[in-house]
Amino acid sequence: MATRPTKCITKNVQKVARSALDAGGGILRLAPTWVPRSFLQPGKRLKLHPDDLYAFGLHRGGIDERWFGSTTEAANDNRTINEGLSAVIHDGQSFLLRDVVADFGAEIVGGAIWKKHKKWPVYSKFFDNMGPIPHHMHQNFKQAKLVGREGKPEGYYFPPQHNNVGNNFPYTFMGFEPGTTRDQVRRCIADWHKGDNKITSLSRAYQLEIGTGWLIPPAILHAPGSLCTYEPQWGSDVFGMYQNLVEGREVPRELLVKDMPKNKHNDIDFIVDQLDWAGNLDPNFKSNHFLRPIVDTQTDTHADKWIVYGRIDGIQYFSAKELTVAPRCKVTVKDLGANSIIVVQGEGKINELKLNCPKLIRFDEMTEDEVFVTEPAALRGVTYENTSATEELVVLRYFGPQVNPHAPNINSKL
Image: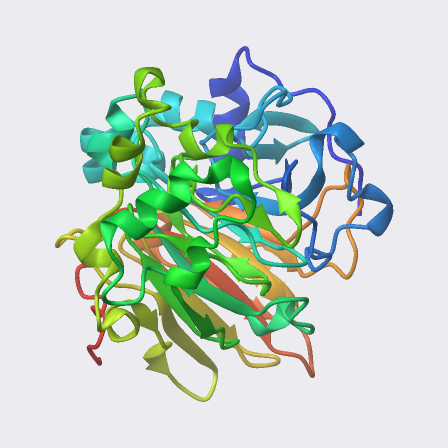
């Protein structure tokens, strides 16, 4: 693999972007976008070379995330310029997908999304840790607006190709055990500096199943386990950590309140009331949030499955599919909107662009496993070709809001 361009151009982006769009028939090649987290331990399943896990510096923490089709900046302290933003690579030049969307609007993301959001409002990532992360929530849109941000619903899928090992804790705490009281949770926050606040003792853990997923609305507590996770989500990085000690590591209280108004940082009642109590106490939590893949189309040459689907308060914020193409086969897929893809297995082509799932990636290397498909290209149809004689080509792709009204809801079947 070649080394990616180190300099990202910001001037005359329209000209080079138009060249890229014309050359790819509306498909843009993206470079890997690596994101570190200072309070977590990498799970080592992103195919990133082990020597590069701390490429941002030890003080920034290890790289445990790779973001796909992102126009959202990572909300990290001491972040580098453009951290979290996907870069398009064309003709030896690098430029931001965010700039392409800003310049070309509906031609990239589609008329409906551009009219309402004036941006690509979603992204996805691989989230990969050695152990569990703190019990936390993501603010809803009303709450996030208080600090000038947006809310964050998210979905999970656990791809088999990135889960050859489950690591330390392949279980996820979600919500609260029915019967949990507000006073019990309030005590966990009040006792933050007195040792383990034991908030997960009020919750319920679910063993994670490879090849399945979950849909998590805002304001729902969850402590993701140690499977590598594909996460389509809203384009926001807001959260509040409600657990103060994980595997013996302290969680700074600043991570509890970082996306709450400053005058509320010591208001325990406000902090507790950020939680969706009905949602967290749902006695049917699993049946209302658990996702099994649902086949959309299946033939001798390919299978296309819904892997993340469902609606939150009646809104489809995102959706995702897994396409598998048999060896030496090809299929033309027409989608209803723009989508971002990542190859998790095999090799082949999307139209005339090469696709290849790498075995190992250096931090500064360019890969051939990630592209962004614009809405016009998706509507025309793109052809996926598996050039291997023996191995399946497997591609994950996610879509923006309300793009797939025919997609199933939770507990439904096609």
